[in-house]
Image 1 (cartoon, rainbow, N blue to C red):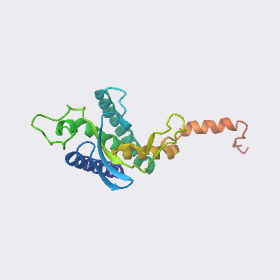
Image 2: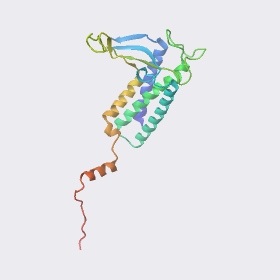
Image 3: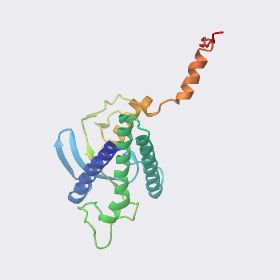
Image 4: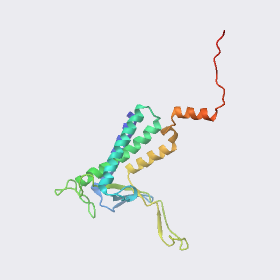
Length: 218
């Protein structure tokens, strides 16, 4: 459990420190070029990954809260059952990332003013830009590794500008992605077969295998 707590607090601190710094020093659309392929670009995400807004904001926020509660319960069971370390690390990363984005949605709208065209004011007199659970998630990590124009002869996209990659995300998103990737790689450890079921399957595969018998001496 100690390892999981270290991961959770480490991700949360790094995620929130960077978000608070971005929110309090930059307006939406501002950029800081670290290298030609790494840029801090401030955007706010109202929906899920890549800005998708399938359902209403309140529904999305409540869903996130319920999901985090479920992940916390899963992580607690894994630690009690002494699951493999890589599984606990994976779930801890997912939990930390999900919680980090919930903090934005729940509190940033209350604590900050609008960031459009200006640096947001902290605790403005008239209140923040959104009520509880209606805040936006702060994103800033952008890796424009390459860009090009598609040749005119390419169907559908010919002549258009393309940048790889265009997604802008945050540390919490990265934590979730790494955790999910680890679960996929180590899915056999994360989701082991039931030992009883496995034993039954082996018996079915070898129905004619002789069994040992004990013969009592007369």
